[in-house]
Length: 189
Image (cartoon, rainbow, N blue to C red; front, side, top):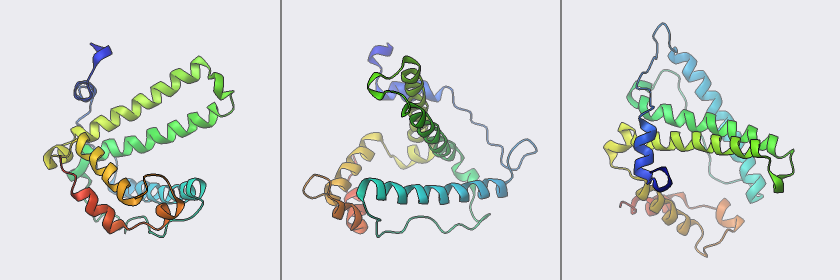
């Protein structure tokens, strides 16, 4: 069965291991101010990492701003608890993947050790688990957002961004976000 697993079967199997508990503010959980502080730091780190990514891979900074107006306590994490769990997991597992890649970069990458290969598969599996959770979350399910819709929307957005169908720094830096969002909006499958 596992040799022929479909994405839907994988999502169902992955979600059998999902915790449905949410301990915000409870005596054994997390205070909202603690969550707010860590997420603000995460947003700031993500913004900086995005700037570095654009300089590394585009050779330029994007003209679009990133980030969110963050006012601690002015949001309700409980209302998005199921999808928040998976969004945080994508971030934390992404960091673990980066840590692993730093370690792998010290090896001869053309002859990756079996241990590094296994660890790479394990970290990618963790990311897949959280990806499955995003798509199976109440928020995305309720909105009728499917993997296919997201994939089609992304292709349409990239076609709008890169009209010549290949990467150009100018297209990556001088984006028309309104046009890209219009392309995404027309992608419902």
